Length: 339
Picture (cartoon, helix red, strand yellow):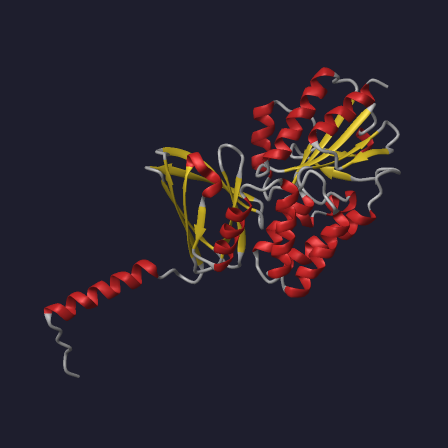
């Protein structure tokens, strides 16, 4: 075979083509996220993977960061900013997604690189100035117009389940609609089961019997919930609202240590993060983390379907409240202590 001879011009064109292909191509089993923010030199953002319950820290240098990870399936990440606002990022194996924004106008941050991310960016831009009820209406419109979009699962959780006023029956209707459009989406199948349990979950009656091993290796269960006020809280290291709920409850606990018993159930994939937070905040009650997240039999038996979630009982194990907002939880605990 005769060797291939290229002119200088053709060689340059060939090298440029190879460089372009090398820079744009992504391995099929990896995902890359690149970010650039104005008015930010150095800092840290948290990136949460809701599929496996993990958290990564993104280091910002000169306003930029790069996150490159092996990825087998489509996954939803949530980028948490220092002001606790969040930005969903939909990752696909072999894709490159770019984030650009200004830290002084985080609501206007753009996410580009896949159709799902660009659709979500358009949704956020269109709803930035709307009131929460209007955003919820727009979210439902989006889900009905784009039922096959991966972003619909995020919208369902964000605006219909983890909202201040969750509507479980309507959320189940929307979830069933999405599942019909995405029959192989495992996350929707699990979410549908959780919503069905929530619909049938009693807000009164007796707490189910349970036992589990906490993160210190001790066996705990409903038998220790025998005080004036007893609270079970579902939380995670990747959810700041749940951590705030725990801190608020700790204030009541510190004021009435003889009248309140608490058990927390961590939905992390590993108990290590939970242990660090417990040590930092000097929390003294049992914390359970079996690493099974939403597949945990304990979570299923108690009917805990999101974070933060909670159950309040009296000394006899009677359920007095369920799924209270953080402010309501603190008020309910103080009210029961006073009885």
